[in-house]
Image 1: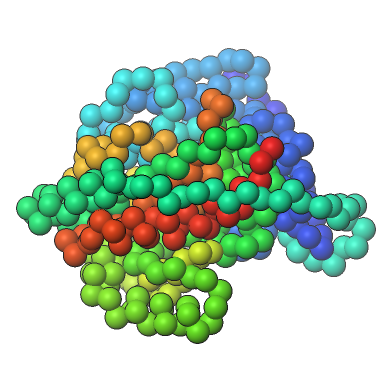
Image 2 (image 1 turned 180 degrees about the horizontal axis):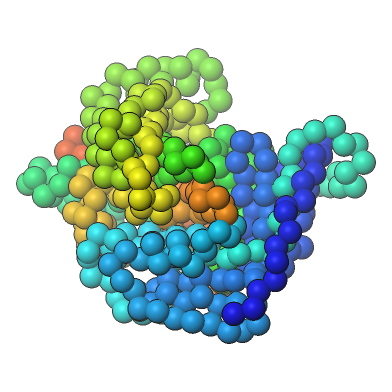
Length: 417
């Protein structure tokens, strides 16, 4: 398999990195991923290698058209790790990979569960004084708010069913989601730029890979793995609306911190995160660094914690990702039962929703953003999706209201094509 040597990413500091990054993405060769972390946008585009995992096998394709395929083994993410070892890669993981990881039946199709690419080009853009950046001011098209307050009867019935399952001790928590269709074409880069200026995400991204397009403002990371083996995860669970009005938001924050249902939902998520990290970390290294802070994420505020550890000898970042995927805060407790419950109550496969968009370093580092607060496009269809965490104290009306609050992080900024 012949492949092109990748040069180090070009770096540039500009006055408006968001504007430049969005413009460059719009003109980029596919596949392309724009990924924001800590005030720096990285644009990866073109592919010298693509790695696609389905339920049937792992395929590695080179730019010259050669390919090799191998069957899926019992550790599929270690097969992915071998395919990108020593390389920088970008891409996405769909929620349905969770069924494969947790021993649940997976339809034997060629639908991708994971799609990574090793880019031909990388550009890093960060903020700085550069009046000659060459990006002229332009008038953004006006967004058109999407109506997300549908009747919601089907979702409320699903919540009621899940509460009954929880009270029957089949599981402790499950996240159920609903889909909002958008009936017109959408300018995805403009939607991303408009929405990013009004959001406060942990990560943000624009993606066009393998026919799947998405823009999102991720509230949390599934996993962060450093080259030194340090690993952490950032569970957010427990929600109230956030309006940007100091007095109103302070009252909602106080209510959130005093709500036994929300505290319970958060605490069991943190406990499971600790248990999962202990599976792959050296003994005695797992700890809760922050517990039950409040993080403001666009149109909502969440209870937020961080759990970290150090990988045990013989383990790599992909072991950590396998242990933590899917995110507790997008699946439930215990995970296998939660994933089975999601499949039973949700009519549409999740695809990228509640999966991850990720960057992989040649040094073994991984940064994986949870795909929530996002807009999706595929095969001529455009849609939004949001969910809520269900525990035994949940009520259908409140959980539906929570999905509306979360959808406001993206639904107010949709720019028609």
